[in-house]
Image 1 (cartoon, rainbow, N blue to C red):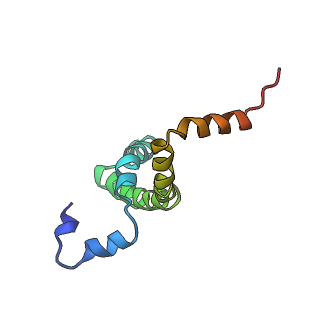
Image 2: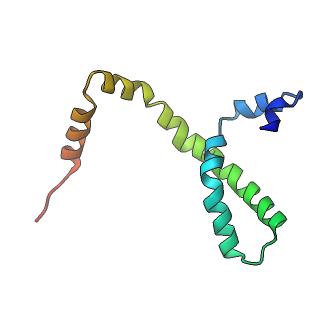
Length: 102
């Protein structure tokens, strides 16, 4: 949070790269746990550094490949919800892709 108040404009530079803050929030815990379980004797500063250097790139990729494309679906989903067509579209896609074999 303190980065947003820096006078250097660092927050604006980071914002142009994409908003990976949600990815950091969601991914940091499983990444830290994985590091800790893989290296049980790791010190807190080493865990912090390893977690930081792994979490930020993973969160950035999450933003680029999952969150941003997902956000581009919002106008279409809003249109489907407003027109009460969402469930019809989902049901049609489910039945079209489902193959029942006995």
